[in-house]
Image 1 (cartoon, rainbow, N blue to C red):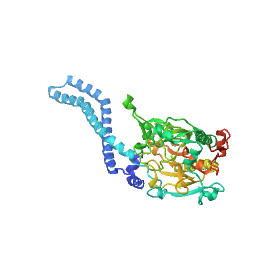
Image 2: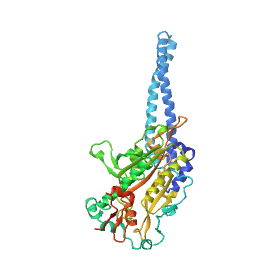
Image 3: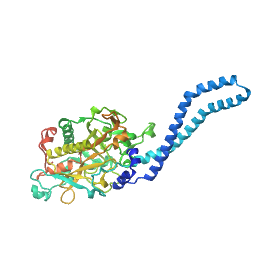
Image 4: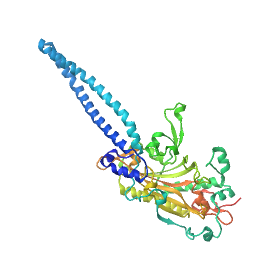
Amino acid sequence: MIDIKAFREDPDRFVRGAAEKQMSVDFDRLSTLDEQRRAVLIELEQKRAEQNRLGKESGPRIGKLKGQLKSASEGDRAELLKALVDLEATPVRLKSEIAALEQVLAEIEPTWYAILLTVPQPPAADVPRGKGSDDNIEVRRWNPAGFDNGVPFAQSRGFAPKTHQELVRSLGLVDFERGVKMSGTRHYVLTGMGMRLHQAILRYALDFMADQRGFQPIGVPVIVREECMIGTGFFPAGREQAYHLEESKRGSNHDLFLTGTGEVGLMGLHADEIIPIDALPLKYVTLSTCFRREAGAAGKDTAGLYRIHQFDKVEQVVVCKADDAQSRAWHATMLESVEMILQSLDLPYRLLQCCTGDLGVKNEDMIDVECWMPGRGDGGAYGETHSASRLGDYQCRRLNLRYKDEQGRMTHAYALNNTVVASPRILIPLLEMHQNADGSVTIPVPLRCHMGGRERIEAR
């Protein structure tokens, strides 16, 4: 959520930001409601202050007037009685006026808040302007020794590559048919060495982040209340992507939602908390099952393991001081962790700076990591496997996650998040890049300790 004070001071910044992200927000209505709300709040504050003052003063004044009445002349009595009636009636009048103003506020605030939640975080000033993913800019790429994705795979490796779909079938790693039988399209069953490879890369990534990068492992719920989804910025814009559990229809006082990333749980941990400044930065990593409806993705990457409804992900989150330089430094560190993992697995990749039109509601900056998939498209193509985002104070403001700065001022922290590894999508480049001419797949060295020491997955 944006800082409403910042919006009042410079509304054009937020109007531009929404336009650059190609998001529609009723800013005129927001401004009108905000002005009305502020006017009501000011009047309410004045009425309540008067109510408090009278509460302290009226008792003695009423007692004084009643005392004067006992000895008042007939001519003064009527005037004293009127003053007493007016004084006794004033609290009743104020109570009624305050109740009326509270009712007006109750009518304004839900719409005001609903529109405020739709205002996106403006892109950082140095994010390239663009309409969509076609306008993203390549930052750098990396290939393992002896491999060049600028030439056909067969030229680099000496044989034509199989797609991951062909490999998982021939090696007995995935059963798509039974997954669909049980749960419908975009579901799958990991079998045998496929399940072990899936678990191996997740464990490797989690251990790497904990042991080598100093992140604290945390296990978080993947079923959360709506306020967690709103607080982390996934609602209202991404509501159609979440699986909804209508617990309220079963007698509960709240519905629940399946999370699409461990980020929701990691950030929700400290909602409505004040973090000690010396505890910052918080560096968390989690391994969780994720669920996405993939609404609107019909016909896009529907075959295989690329776009599925359920997967597992190692996610990293950083909560740091409200400092742009610190946020940018952590962004670079997060990406460095991903690059170290991918290079250790000999997986070619590239980094893409996302343009304004490809940023989400909550992101002020985002870098995507795409791995080379030899079986993708016609002759191989990059496919997104990771995404690292800077969110400024957008998420922490919605979650009311704060700290006291060095001057003792209450400040909303900054947040960042990044995919360390998501599987089984990462299995696509891993299997396709490490396949051999005989149909087997070489297991990358860092994963072998989690695979019983095996070096290869052999064809059946």
